[in-house]
Length: 324
Image 1 (cartoon, one colour):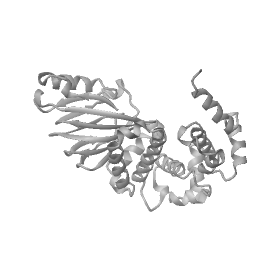
Image 2 (cartoon, rainbow, N blue to C red; image 1 turned 180 degrees about the horizontal axis):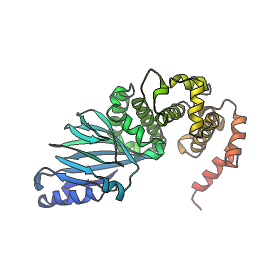
Image 3 (cartoon, helix red, strand yellow; image 1 turned 120 degrees about the vertical axis):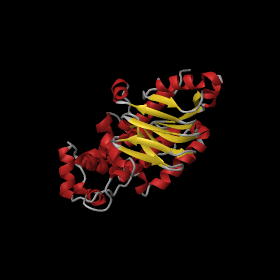
Image 4 (cartoon, rainbow, N blue to C red; image 1 turned 90 degrees about the horizontal axis):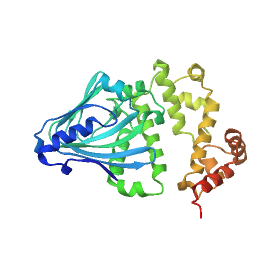
């Protein structure tokens, strides 16, 4: 665990000025205004790393944080937070809309773009922080999902999961499976955002093409382990015809069948070097990423990465072994 900020480190008279200066110099870049008197300011922030994601817990007295277009230009950011609010209602304005986030509610906040956010009184947040690029989704999809998370059937699960993860954060960060858990959280958040941004049952062809292709690819990512995954199933799940599916993919320069194979191989490559999967055979890993035939998997892996899965695993293990 890393303690990022704790207002108790500062004398009461210095707290507001010190906390404001620290947060304004944070990576995202923003203006901060604390509502309370200097002696009453509270600002505590903790963080834990799970591979590609960060868990954070914050407790902050009344404040407003504002990221302007000037900050957006000066300090580009790739960070999204999926945030569970507690203690106080948050008033958040982003993407041209104002949202009231009640205690216990969950919302996605894009730290890259302009926003104004805050609350009165002592409140806090529990967050997953992650890279939008790593998620493979666009600002447009985030904007479409913002304010609509609760419409997704995944919403209660994700909200409860964030609370559960933060509650066990010290144990999880030290666990050998931490990185794999972080990867699964990426998939969970991607599924939630795509689910919330989508139109649900209806005509998928009515969705803007950029959102549709991200929805299609997100669906595939969450079903890579299904060896029976077929193009007609993908089309049906996204409420489009097979013909329209191929058209949208082609316009984005994607050969869907080849893309699926590439994604499966990349996932297998990561699993082969993950200590959490060291006990699993290569055939089991092949099956876990959707390959029915281990020999076919080995051949495609070698074509993609220049060595067999076994050699890849051995080379990674050798690189991690300290010299004697």
